[in-house]
Image 1 (cartoon, helix red, strand yellow):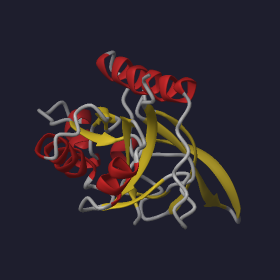
Image 2: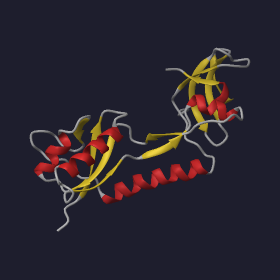
Image 3: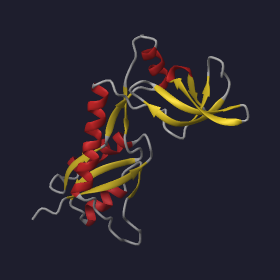
Image 4: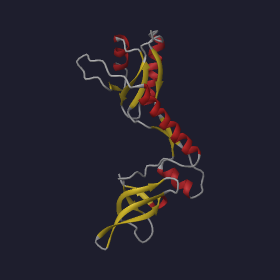
Length: 191
């Protein structure tokens, strides 16, 4: 009987791939290949802000990948006591989603939810291949305008269009907030 289900593991953000590598090595060295079936980090392509400016200027640019769910990896496994212990005691693992502690085993992710997340990754990859890119210019992000008549002003992004590389930013004009459209090339994300 196959008891393998998908589980969501929390890790230190940025260490997801190191955790997967460490777990794969432990599975082999501890001969647990019958318990673990698959490991996933939901990686998607993106263009960092500096590279995006190069793209906008028609220069060569580099693309990168990042986790769609930073700080999480997904493991399909049979949740035995040994497997649970192995995962919890791997470097950079901070926990298992759905485990309340006190020896309570975590709750698996439904196959439906897992397929939905995999479809989202595929959709982002297809969009990226077709020129529709995911950027750091998200609704609610505070940006500063670097050029033009509004140079030096800042505001929140209220709409974005990654396909046209434009964002609508609420800036203050004549004492009230006014939504104004800007190219990503003149916006700087304020950290």
